[in-house]
Amino acid sequence: MEEKIQALREDAVEAAGEAGTLQAIEDVRVRFLGRRSELTRLRKGIGSLPAEERPTVGKLLTDLQGDITTALETRTVAIREEERRRAIEAERLDISLPGRRRALGGYHPITQTKIRMCEIFRGLGFEEVEGPEVETEYYNFDALNTPSHHPARDMHDTFYITDSVLLRTHTSPMQIRYMEQRQPPIRIVVPGRVYRRDADVSHSPMFHQLEGLLVDRDVRFSDLKGVLAVFAREMFGADTRVRFRPSYFPFTEPSAEVDITCIFCDGDGCRVCKRTGWIEVLGAGAVDPEVFRAVGYDPEEYTGFAFGMGIDRATMLRCRINNIRILFENDMRFLTQF
Ligand SMILES: [Zn+2]
Image (cartoon, rainbow, N blue to C red):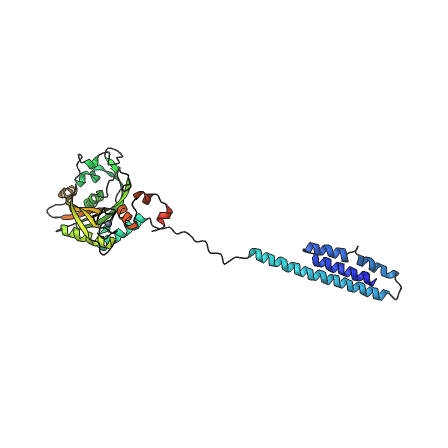
């Protein structure tokens, strides 16, 4: 009998130890402690044992029940602990992972150039104003001393919307609009989009210009030169020099093309500057008296100068690219470099 009870104990403890879930524990409990278990059967048989054996067997069976219960409880605690550990593991945050970086937007290189240009001119006392991109022939050409027979008015060069409405070919119409509304002194810069029928590696049908206009009494050509020399040094580097070459524009007289020393070779001559050491960056001149007459200013009383430059061209120099299309393709690999 004693051996039988010991074997039962070993079976029960082993079964409890192997139980992997709370349900399995319950199954083991029913099997070894339930109404139909061997233990219950043995207990019922005590009455048929000789009287002197009854207390001994009764005690053995009570001990057996205690041992099985303990084994089941121990295993239950272990299973609960294991389940808790697994739940924590499943919810654990891995704080060693790098965070997700939020991509920040930025200004397009052309906008960056425009902002820098306007900053420099603001420092020289110029106010920044903007005008309409859809213009009339009057503001774009007539008032700027560009008569109807002028080649710039050709259908091949200009995007016409109707016979007398067009996409502005330069930012200069804003000179007229501004002067019509005000009396000198005037100091403005006009950045904005302009349109011409032109497209190759250095021309885009839509591009950006910055126009400047200064009108006052006793404005001289040397004032223009001084303003542009300061601008060139601020924009392209302290050692940058400027060179004026005679040129022609309908709305300025005299007119000049303005070059800066090549920023790639410092004037020694390279492929970009075609071995000349100079790069053309803008056009300028003294305001033509005809333009003053168009806005009702007395050319005997007022003089002034105007200049215009390509923001895209300056951006190409700054970003060191030789194809203007890169500026308008919005390729992030290019844009994120600036
Ligand atoms: Zn060069």
